Length: 230
Image 1 (cartoon, one colour):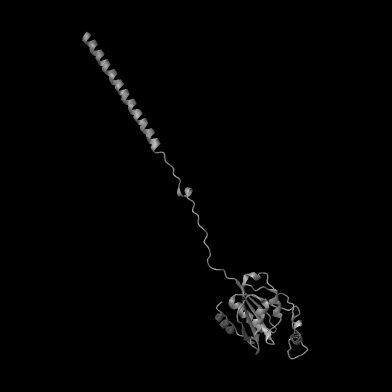
Image 2 (cartoon, rainbow, N blue to C red):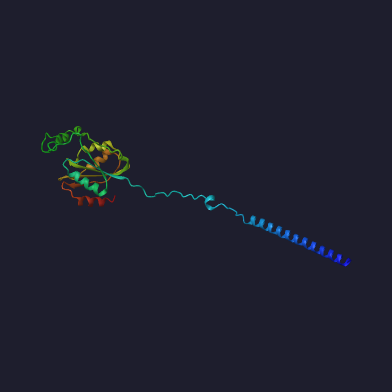
């Protein structure tokens, strides 16, 4: 009987120790898993680094236009009978220029332009230089500064530029502009007309002009313009 009791007590103690050991292992495993999960939580937390777009600003400097900007071209003309107007229209068409027709406030009639009549207006003005001041309807343009090249056309009267052009010359400053005179006539040449206009202007880069015949052709004008190499 005592042996049975002893055996029973021994078995009970073994079972108790086994249970304790099992609980200890279970707790240890749980702690290990907890620590592992905690570690993973820390190591898997993404580290945000500033991207290139937030740390660097791309600064593009504006490109500079190194090509010089070309100014516009203006064709100014006085035409008594239409010949100079025709030459001016050919020049404007070939160069893409704007035009300004010089129109006297008191236009010249056919009788006024009769050189063979000593009492005609044009003969009187020629003989009396003080009478050559001709008021123009328009002698300036609003955007004058935008023009780099100015063609000035006129008929030849007694070897010089028809004096209605003088009003335009006096009203404008040609500083920094290339000025090119042209004229039309039945027989007279350019003479000193361009030089006299340049002298009256006092400013500008005046080129040698050209004389066209009364029946000026577009081909003649085009050939001349090509030779200028503007």
